[in-house]
Length: 415
Ligand SMILES: Cc1cc2nc3c(=O)[nH]c(=O)nc-3n(C[C@H](O)[C@H](O)[C@H](O)COP(=O)(O)OP(=O)(O)OC[C@H]3O[C@@H](n4cnc5c(N)ncnc54)[C@H](O)[C@@H]3O)c2cc1C
Image (cartoon, rainbow, N blue to C red; front, side):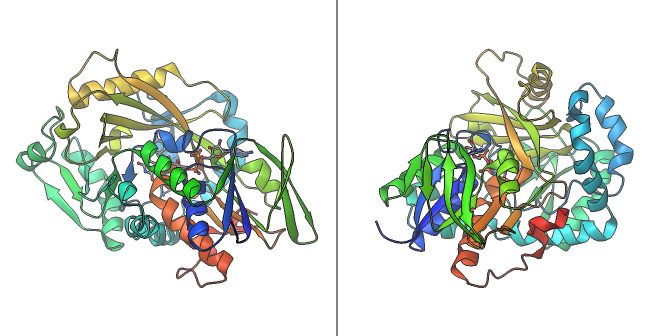
């Protein structure tokens, strides 16, 4: 093996995509992660390559809606009271991001990553046809259960159209064709044509990990705990058992990036936005494309092995066990969507979205070291944005113009 040793901390979808982008540019990646590649948050997401994800969660009116959302025992959002004090800084930045001018700016920055996201995946996987076969670009449905819900989404959909998204109305007959297995019928659905999906987020990670290994990358199953450097250059990453020299480092440790970011000179209001899924052994052909039900806070996606109902948001910190009540909420949604009541074969999962208050990731150089790079905080969009992230970080490291304005993703925006 030749090339510069690039340590990537974290082998989730963001770390894997970044390592692959660096490898194809001649670097020699060493991925450090105590867990199996792709086995954490990147394992259980809804699989959407969400082209229409250009609408920030933080928008005017969010705090007005919050009490009703939090008090609803079957709602899509919960905050564990014990975790509330930890959310003060996060909440402050959410309030700032929800100002109208900020919403417009953040939406543009989201679009710069998500609009080309599917194509960036195809670029990154150019020589991996088996991985490319996991991708489909059939669009994504938005299901509104009433005219009122649809009207409530008018501003969000107007913003999507302003960003150039194609949204088509779908009537009940068309919906029955697109989603014959869906019990929930709606005369108020919208099809976002620019979205896609992967049919197995897990297999995508495994293809990337195998391709990396085949081309000489190494995986070290340990936890990174510190960095070493002299002046502005970082020279090694320290794990529980040793010191690993490197030419450059990329921090991509998802929801657990905060302590290491601090060692690289940045204090960030990163929190874990926990989400849940149920994998149902239903025929995936009953749903020809993924669907989002915004009022229920879930997506349903046809995967290789069944249908996944995924979503909900819980702020409870990194270490709290999964909340049983959230699986019940998902089961109620699955009942409504597919009229099933036997969940004995459903597989349950909880994961930690690495979330920043404005919904944008942190991408760019670390403040303290010229050879340390940050790629974390992708929140609800890490699968969508991972390839774009990897290719941008590669361009920055190689000294190439990244093609988009990187200012909105700078970690210093929370200083
Ligand atoms: C229910 C749900 C549905 C979702 N649906 C979608 C969707 O449809 N589309 C989409 O684009 N996104 C979706 N997401 C979001 C997406 O899954 C995440 O944004 C993405 O997985 C984050 O990837 P990551 O690589 O940053 O994090 P992870 O996959 O969590 O990887 C981070 C890795 O870093 C490792 N690590 C942590 N600390 C250290 C350390 N100190 N040293 C070494 N390694 C460390 C961890 O072990 C882990 O393997 C969803 C998320 C959830 C929860």
